[in-house]
Image (cartoon, rainbow, N blue to C red):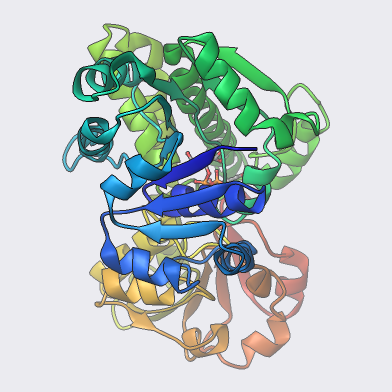
Length: 439
Ligand code: UGA
């Protein structure tokens, strides 16, 4: 394994990829324009919470295989293979993705590439981006055609980033030459030799695999949440419905958890960017169902607020609300498009006094929403509450004892936004238990 790799963009994806590639034995240089982030990573400190990643980061800093820098000169000099892992957030006020970080990366890197190398895009991008960037790369780099582009989408989940990076379900590569394919096959030999399937295709298909995977996952979640709406109207139980569906292995049980729906930095913005791109390609009708997927998802948040208000007799004014969860999902401190914080802020806007607790995301939540109250523990957040809302299903919340928690609240009202608790147990302890999609 001779290659020296750079990883450009050291956010969630990049920091994980850099550390895991070093773990596999490569020499890796991580690059970011954010000097503060680079300083923290160089000191062995992760700028975000991800179980299991920090020891890998530290180990590989110590053994010298991993370094970080802000210098593109150093990146071009160091690497034979350059992974591009910068973000593609939603543009403010639009559905489309903001491509400026990806474009800036190529603009900065290309003129410094003087020898043969492979630039590999991993960021989630609108289909057609790789084609466009490959032309730009060839035009701007002194190495000309020897500086080639490939696309290699990433499927890692936050909270399982290490496992997903080192043992992915599949590797997808979009290439335009045998040389690029060979380089990527070499890079991923440690995984393919363990039986991980590698799919070789063109640029456009590889880009589409990523967004269609996220669109499918979002659709699956919204499907079960639409069933939850029907269950609520028909006095049926969506958790039983989902369990029964899951035994059909054509359907499967994963991503069939009804509740407050999806958030985070990927699913919501990816389905919107996908719709925007389909519109540009003249096939917006093909993806118009994603508009409904998005709408179902947002309606769950509204329903959650309505349920809490109902439990309080019709108004939040002068009432205390204890919120368990701020991260968009457990095992993460990420609050981007967090359903939990969306619910918390709209209850506050309607006059409720809201106190939030989350095991990892408190600092991020406080920075983004200083107007909310914050507790130091689940018990602290629910102190004197008239209603408790479970909005992110951390294990420590699932394991709460209804009897013990009951001692802290003013009234034993709970809305389980993630169908994570046992209703019988909570009702037996004297709680009014309500949940999304359940009688
Ligand atoms: C998602 C995809 O799962 C990854 O494969 C992909 O690589 C990543 O986006 C990305 O594009 O980078 P992630 O955003 O980490 O990963 O989160 P997920 O585990 O997919 O969860 C997304 C949301 O769906 C969470 O808010 C979660 O609470 C919600 N969810 C998940 C449900 O509401 N119900 C379920 O049954 C499952």
